[in-house]
Amino acid sequence: MFIGEYSHNVDEKGRLAIPKKFRADLSQGAVVTRGLDSCLFLYTKTEWSKLAEKLAQLPFSQANTRAFARLMLAGAMDVEVDTQGRIMLPQYLRNFAGLSKSVIVAGLYNRLEIWDEEKWKTYTASTESESASIAEQMGTLGV
Image 1 (cartoon, helix red, strand yellow):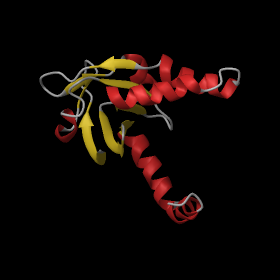
Image 2: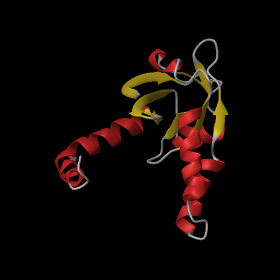
Image 3: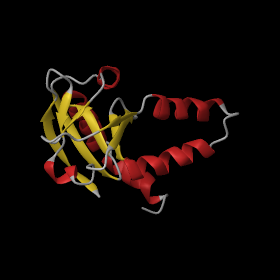
């Protein structure tokens, strides 16, 4: 399970050090793709396979399901954790997420999210200020 929030840097070659506690889970390879809210999603191969299978089952006759599948699948890239615990983030994905040098790696149960640090600060400040309203809505979902 991925949990926690970690501050890291992307080097000039586009490499990102993965927090040490997550490296073993990603040692068999991983997949990075466009995420939602202007971040990147990083999945283990197992979790990626589950998601890809669900996306493949969506009705392709609906425009919104085609668009979501394209967002997630066409932008995906296999990545390997190197001996120094880093992955290579392709330039097109760094551009998509607006990643600069400072990034946040956030654990969200079955995936990691990779955020530009300033975007993360803005997002979390907004979410924290809306937390009571969000909690009420989650209650209707049984959370």
